[in-house]
Length: 303
Image (tube, rainbow, N blue to C red; front, side, top):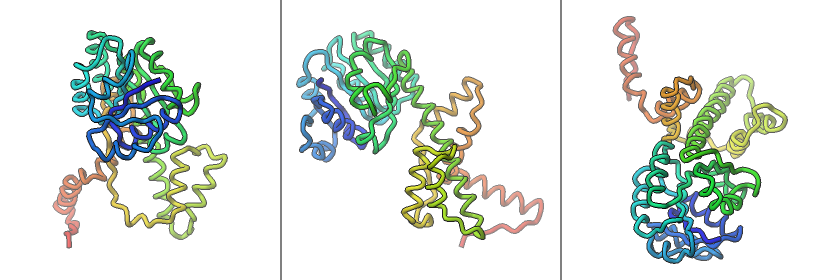
């Protein structure tokens, strides 16, 4: 029950804690010293000084979980680990990687005798307490090796984790999961914006959200979080109306186009995020000018 973890951000650090509290011995490394220092008092977690130390201290057929941003950070860590690994070792990518990249990685690593698991992970900052939903891709033997750790990380030994299919299937499932998440969040935000706009009803949105949590067909964890936010009473005017996108929504929209399968809700939710980032500003300014030219409508200027 030894496992290595590379990357001790919000997800990686809490996954290390949950694994250690579940009985695993965790060897961990992060390039940022402060991230490692935050775990120094955790029983059964040892933070090492580098990838070489991590690989050397693990016994037998090693299992190493990468919790790094997709793209170059993940690929860089894999490239650095390759000279340190032996046939039979297993790499698990728990980041939000593009599923086609994971398929390519699995093939390349298998040619060197290494096993690879692409692990879609959901649970966010609440995963330490409540467990992580795991969507796993890879060959059956690779999944079998990682299974004891999946059972600890998941909400229950038999629930909240799934071998979705061959390499790439785990990250594909997580990609679509995040696309659905975009649409659900957008619908909740738009609905409460409409409720708030009808001022004459003087609706108590916090109490309404709390009411919907019980018996309503829209009850969900996202609604729970919405109710929590509204109950805190923080003025929305203090929050900049900018919503980042991590990339998974983009990949989901591209998959919709590639397959020719309509996904208008997910795609429009992604477009709303782009708009919030100011990417509609040029078009809106040009629209205002066009309207002024053909209809004589006044243009508002910045003060």
